[in-house]
Amino acid sequence: MKLLVAVKRVIDANVKPRVKADGSGIELANVKMAMNPFDEIAVEEAVHLKESGKVSEVVIVSMGEAKCQETIRVALAMEADRGIHVQTEAELQPLAVAKLLKELVEIEQPDLVIMGKQAIDDDSNQTGQMLAALLGWPQGTFASKVELGEGEVTVTREIDGGLETLALNLPALITTDLRLNEPRYAKLPNIMKAKKKPLEVKRPGDLGVDITPRLITLKVEEPPVRAAGIKVADVAELVEKLKNEAKVLS
Ligand code: AMP
Image (tube, rainbow, N blue to C red; front, side, top):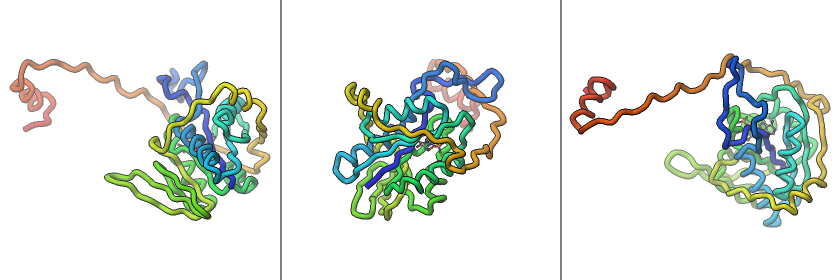
């Protein structure tokens, strides 16, 4: 059984993003980048399924600038088998990523595609759903538990006030939620081994996909700065302020 995992290179989750002075987007120059956290969870799940003996190969795909290859190498050091980089300097929006992934799925014929539920840079939460629709495959989004069976996969999803369990016929697509697992750290010998694992480079044109953006970003703004709080002397003053200043009590 073969798994395909999509990983995006994004601003490191520990870095506070800064809006560009002209409001056209987020400043990326000299900013630390890393694998999207939900995609680390996707890689961990795929490698874990391989270790359980049910999967023979884990293929990693990343799309974007040349440095995406560093992100693919991180996944290979987490013990995935090989990588595919779709290289482009152009902006890639979710529909373009989904169309490129569809072409790769048709070439690679995986039994299961695992992706993050959302990329923490654009917060789109669209690519997995679009890919499943383009392929006509069943999808289990926001997975918090995955059990691979014969010809099917069982996916548990956290929904408001409970859990939903779905059985999907393979081939299928899963997107990961935070509680699915805790991704491993790559060990030094594996980082060395990862450097020698196969990594194929393609261009969007090789896959015959038009990646022209469909959305225009009009403006990006910082959230308003929160005003400082105040201390009140007693409950009476608090109630007075809630009534007369905040006007949340009548
Ligand atoms: P999004 O729909 O942008 O929130 O992204 C959802 C998921 O799609 C991510 O967690 C990745 O698994 C995948 N994805 C999005 N963009 C890329 C990309 N440029 N390269 C590889 N995977 C991507």
